Image (cartoon, rainbow, N blue to C red; front, side, top):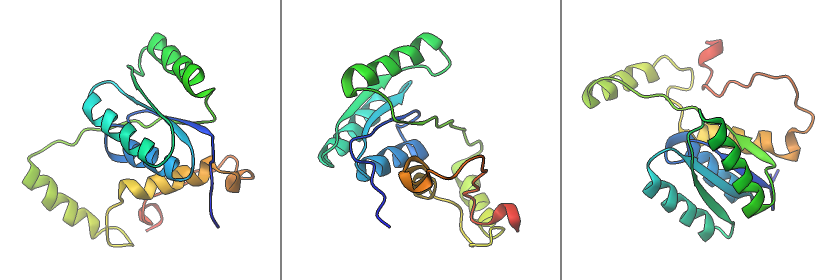
Length: 155
């Protein structure tokens, strides 16, 4: 099944890296125009917008603090003014990792062994689910909890 989001407008928060960036690109690849938001890392957001434009889609970068009602209102108004509205909203919350880089890598390898699929999830795994849920293919999906966790929750 070819999932298309042609000419829909997606708003993705936390889009400068990781899951947010992967979701923004996946939505654009499926045909959506994308508003990418970040509070910092504007160079990364501009580079992401350039990648989206190279895919033939429109992209708008918005610097906003999603904890500020005024910033969120301005972000949505920018989407309306620049792209005609918002059809898809992916509110991507971010988490920081603690510890030294070497410790994290060893921890990741150990943790991956506890997943039925034998690997940790990638940002693209979540991005694929985002595109599906934003598409008409999911129009009869309601009230579900979708675990994108490699089987960890049922292991």
